[in-house]
Amino acid sequence: METDATLVAVIDLGAYSARLEICQVSADGAIEILENLSHPLPLGNDVFAGGRIRAGNIRLAERVLADFRRLMQEYRVEHCKAVATSAVREALNRDIFLHRVRQYSGIAVEVLEGPAEIRLIFLAVKKALAGRFPLHQGNAVIYTIGTGSSQICFLQNGHLRSADTIRLGTLRMVESLDERISSQRLQEIVDPFVAAILGSVARMTPGSHPENLIAVGAPVRGLVQLRGRRRQAHLARMTRAQFLQVFEQVAQSSVAELVAQYRLPDVIAQSIEPCCHMLEHLFEVTGAKHMIVPMVNTRDALIADLMRDLAGRPDPFIPEIISAAESMGERYRYDAAHARKVADLALLLFAETQPLHQLPPRCRVLLEVAALVHDVGYFISSRSHHKHSYYLVRNTELPGVSSLEQQLLATTVRYHRRSLPKTAHLEYTSLAPEDRVLVSKMAALVRLADALDRAHVSKVRGLTVAISDERVLLHATGPEDLTLEGWAVQRKADMFREMFGVDVVLAGAGVS
Image (cartoon, rainbow, N blue to C red; front, side):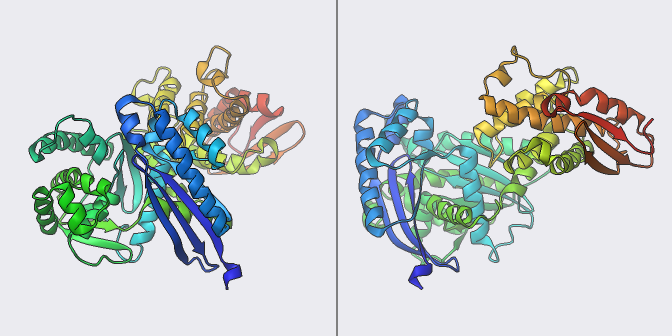
């Protein structure tokens, strides 16, 4: 029934266009697209050349979004999600831009950071491939090719292991040169770049070979259209031979010919040849026999995410965040058994001491990640390894983790040992006051969990927690002597005592 349907809209401000999609979502989750509009908005021309969005394009964005808002009002849209990607993300005057468009149009635009964009695309790809392609078998590369930036993800048995956002897109690459780019020149630019990117992924995941190639993005969907075949509802397949045939066809055609013959938007027509060079090299280095093209875009992913939020369903991406954290630990040769033990103990403490810390649910995810990677600094040096851990976590992109959350994670790791926060610690004092409290609470839990596995041999097999007005009693069970752990708990409970005003005591058969 119509009354059971929800009207939603998503807006995507890309590097070269603004797009609006208005959908009706039925109670059973079926989505019907009512409007799909695109308007040229060359923000990338400004940002990728000069770093700032020019006044004229800010005014254009104001008018475009105001038009979008009027249309949404006509449809009586109930929920709207508006995001901006690479161009606005990199603009030096992005705050001014966001303020201006909100003031003029009434639409609040959120900057979609690289890790958030990776999360959205991964979930959309996973949904599109479900039951159609065995993503859970073997290793795969998901390469998202955009006009302003690209993302690359490496998967093992269906789980995300590493990902990166790359400041290079199809039109951005072409516009970086003043001259008309030849195929040979494109080859010279793209090949070393893609080789370096895939080489870094290979270093992140030693011993793994990505035999499956999954390509996403409007230029890739344009390639499918060039084949002249009706695409499937959810995905298309293209063998390497078929791809090379289309590539030859593209190389022999001008942009105007592609627009006229295949009715491609001008932006996509300009993007296809650079896209082909990227894909050719990806075929070469992965050894893939075919390419899978899920027919998904950012707006599809935004609608699915918006509906999940409205329904109150849990984030399905959390296992991928944990997988990526474990992959980071492996990259820096962490003690996996110790890291997992500390994470499990920290999660148990999080659950049992909730009346004390009252942290929001999202902090449970951040706490698990912090516990998993708290010792990665040993890769650099055992001396002051907590500081080295801070640096590595602060400078390693984790998919699905915002830049602020990454800062919270790094600072939590920084205080898993040694001194408590001081005014001289800029990494701590640069946080907002409420974020300092979050960090201190999470660090207090990680310190306790780390102390409970002081010998790195998982002595503590069971743990119960009892809270009273003056103390928290940890009762540990295990087959071995826990004297060392009891000593460590007394030393490392200092932050817990300071934050929550209670003492911590470890008791058990093996505690002296």
